Length: 521
Ligand code: PHE
Image 1 (tube, helix red, strand yellow):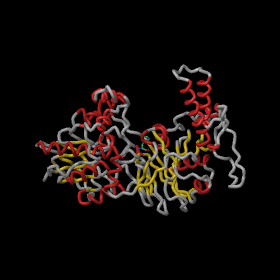
Image 2: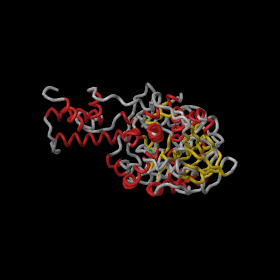
Image 3: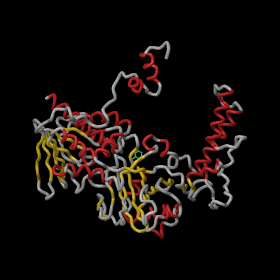
Image 4: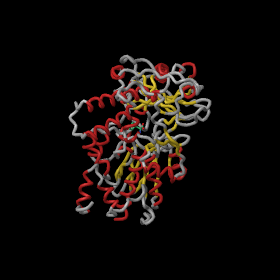
């Protein structure tokens, strides 16, 4: 660092990958922010201020929990007969009726469950981990990537219509691309500014990365596994690799297969899950907020008053009620809010009607036997396919138990709409037919299923906010500001849409904003 001032150093390092904050921090020029969570201890208490919170999902309950610490008098109105919103776990007896459907009652047994909504927690979602810790929620690893799971390409290319272990395709593809690059570099056919030493080092890397032979060819690899398990005393027999063009023409570079689970920031290992089902988390909040949550309270109108808010709703007995307060935190998903009469400003109304939500569906299938573990040796992880089911998730817990529940599909957008439009029986049949191509054991071992299309679930009407660039530009900032005495929270008011961390962050934001306003008078 000789001959460079601290200012120059900060400026220089700031342009490299946005390292400015880390540098300032390292130099002791700024202090670490508070650990995720509100510093409420030294904040003045807001005695007597009333807040109505619409929705007992994670955002609403977190807001109530934090406001409670500050002395606010909160009431949560929740339309459903349960808390948690889209953090919902299907268990024996869970019920749901979609907007146009018949009632489903979950018949999972033996303590089996399926997280219908939130399921996995990225390791860097500090705020989610903080609340789990604070509420005593136990976590375990969610296996998001398992190379023993399958790729199944229906109707495409030479490798179509068979279950292929992910480790085979990944090893082969890595091997061939490393071989190609090694050849190109060796023959100087790439215009790279590299010294002979650089070339030597890069070749060594490519050899290791692709498991190439000493003469730099990819000839297959033990990383692909053995086609026949020979036991400890039999000589292992390797299979020939697939050809590069077989892999390319079978569609395995398509996003349906490509490495989402390892590459995208929110899905890189390690992911975590709540032991026993994610609904344990909202239930833990609810047990701390018992006397302030009103279930089966359906909002009818959202009104501004001269000094605050007035919410009209039907209570659990269907009686029309009115509740006045100083502030309201509205966490209702926008497709639901759209149809509730309100006094919101024009920009807020525009945001509510123009921000789109993701269509998404899941099915939980209980099988009489965990054949994917017993026969296929798949313990957690995800199988990928270009069929409508898109993917199959294997449970990351209770390995080798007697029975188990798979996530038989988890799809989005057009496919979720198509499958969601089927009857419950047809959805089940589709999941069994398509999944059965990958796992022939499906038909014999099937026990029961429960499916859902989030865009058809009352009081949600979508999976999560799915901003376009345009709606982000036009409407996002509107939702961050109060509209009179109304504040908006929920994953849709963040860049962390579709994650619990978004709900938590948004709750902290509105609590800070309200407290700021109250303290400043
Ligand atoms: N958080 C949800 C999930 O883990 C939705 C999501 C899917 C978000 C894929 C980002 C990427 O399934």
